[in-house]
Image (cartoon, rainbow over all chains, first blue to last red; front, side):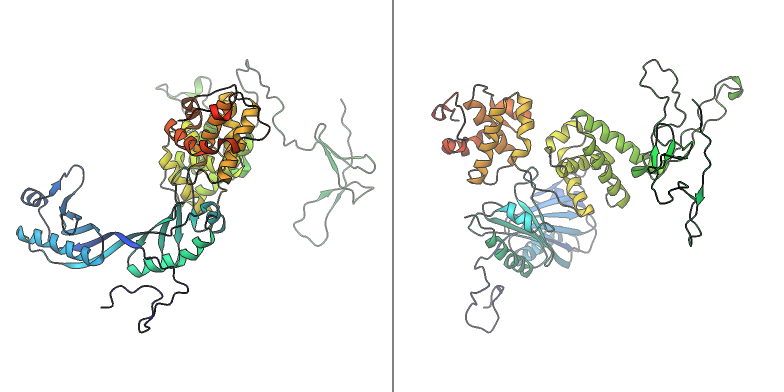
Length: 201
Length: 326
């Protein structure tokens, strides 16, 4: 099947265009999504009945529930809204959210699955060469923030697409703030030639 | 002392309805008059004629002396005006009355209102006082304090960081001013004189840079050498050697990704261990604000190529091969 659409690949052409592509694909590490179960919940009841649930109302006003497959954590609020974190792909996040909804449903609440939305996606990759962060912060001053006293990586706030990249001297790059996988790929393709220009010799 | 009564000739600029009469010398209308503050005169430079007399002196109050025994301040005009930063503070305060007539039947003073003065700028004045206190603790010169005040004023007027504590904004402004003047202080040094945490100062720092749309130069190892070395009591030779070592280490990329402060501390350690004035890692860590394990880590990275890092004319008290290996 088509699988993942890689940037630079024009559907219909049978060969990968090699010019202008880095050849590196950022790997997704974390997806944060929200869903509305559509009914108010009794958190104390859920915490007592469900397995792998913790509820400490003095510390935080939600039940923290975990499932092993996909390995995710959910915050379930009394309004019926839920936040699901820790999944490694969009499908896994949706599947995990459905599993949590199922758990809540089995406990007797009329849970539905409304407005599932992915709020944040985090990905990481390695460009496999060391980077001169001092040079990068000099030329891209309006986008970069590099304060070794505060954080060892350079924080690059790309405007289009609106993604924040953490760039480290070792060549590792973390991309975050995306709502869509394509944004991550686009951001990485944008930054890769810039990073090539600041390769340490 | 006698006063000259000089006739003053006025001339008006033609064609300008709002022109104030300008004082000019009658013989040399084009000459620019020189002001003599000592006598309050305006003198024509061409012929020496005293043209304007009894000019109002806008300098400080003459009768204010730095006299410890001055029980009452004879100043008739109050503090120097701070026009750049206050927007013209021309309020009048009424002081507490003396004598029996100023108290009503219960013993309370009749006229009580002496509190409200420029309430809009009170927070700003407070912040300036705080900035002055902080800067005084680390002996910062007047130019940095002025720059800090200006930065704070700009941020305060912009109101984009209104929710943040004023002390945090003030501390961050102080940090930025030191950086902009070319003598950066570490965040830890600013923390030491402020009640705000390093995290909050760092956050405010980034917000202020974005709000004012400025940027600052990256810190280098050399910026801190003179301060750290003199606080440790190291001689100039060792300081120069440490500066050279740190610069060379960064050039040769022996310490990728390490904070310049850590590299500077490790360089100072290496230079001091090679000289007669040996300092321990703990002492250097205390002055620089880095943990001694951090110095150890950076030292391990620069130790293998220690021989190349020393300046060529350095006098070794301990040769390179006898340097401590951690």
